[in-house]
Length: 446
Image 1 (cartoon, rainbow, N blue to C red):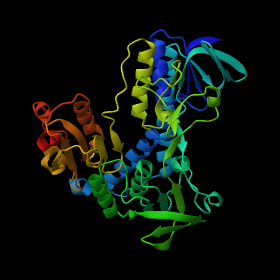
Image 2 (image 1 turned 90 degrees about the vertical axis):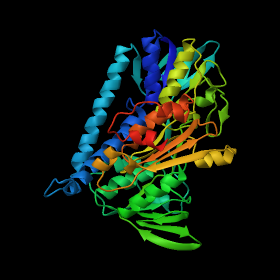
Image 3 (image 1 turned 120 degrees about the vertical axis):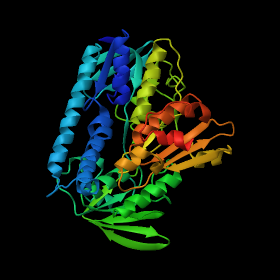
Image 4 (image 1 turned 30 degrees about the horizontal axis):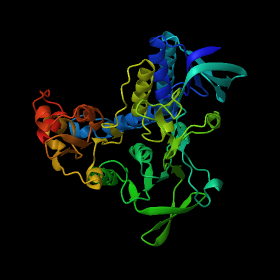
């Protein structure tokens, strides 16, 4: 069975590429060994945000008296929260399946394996059948990093998978890793009443985000009862006891559950990559600005490149790859990739940070305001602080925007567009922002 395009991996990159290719008349086949939607939809982005929203609703109910609303006997049922999460995932997976059918994409559920590549043809085996394709797109995603920690292999620890399916609220949880996934789970379990301890090896949580705002978020979460150990290294794990080294001293911390969240790495094995002889870069597949690998007939998008392990990056990379197949030659831009952490409060950033600008020796100016300069924010937030921080170049070009406070995840879209289009502060200030909105804080800060 021959196809013009074969795609391995049905996550955000894979299903986006498949739909776009199919709708443009490219005979496309999509291989996915698990469920359509990949890690993002089934055990990542969507499930965690569903849980975090339930936690936010619960927290809002508990805080309702501050808004003149009385609620009694407030409680949460984690098993029902998990059941709702599963319902949301099923609904969205079904939606992707319908999109594939509408685009005329053949979907094969199975473990695809690249057998060989000859002149103008790639052979792929799956479910005891052989498929051929002229072009290949690799979208195999990423997996959880399991570090070498003494005693870890003998310990019953959680990764995000177990945390997403657990139906009982633990008394306490120690999270190894203060990155995005770890901090989101910290916020979730804290809202449910769990004692949360976070251990991070670096001197601040959320590496890659604005360091100052990350510190402010840590302070906000600390006020809610989360215990942080930064600049701390985990040296051993035994049963429910974690030994950490901090400031030259070793201390033991006990928790009923241990959640491991130290990062993710590209999946580069199990599908015959060794039979393609592609050039690698860092920990992933090397690609050019059109998402082509060292073989022009083979493309790679998403986490497999090891560059930007974000679902929205993967979606845009997939669009660029298929557009190149269609002869449009639009280059991939990483100038304005938003990063969001869906804690309560949220934190989001796009473009340069002070740290990256200083490292590159680029002069800049900081403009910063509390979110309380927004009337809408004050009306809807009886407690909690927020900050909008904008970095400008010497000519007024907007270089980076970083926001702490709800709804940062929505506001950052405005900033991303401005940065991608190279807008100057005066140009964005001239735009009319609806009043009252929290988004007005961007104009106020400028």
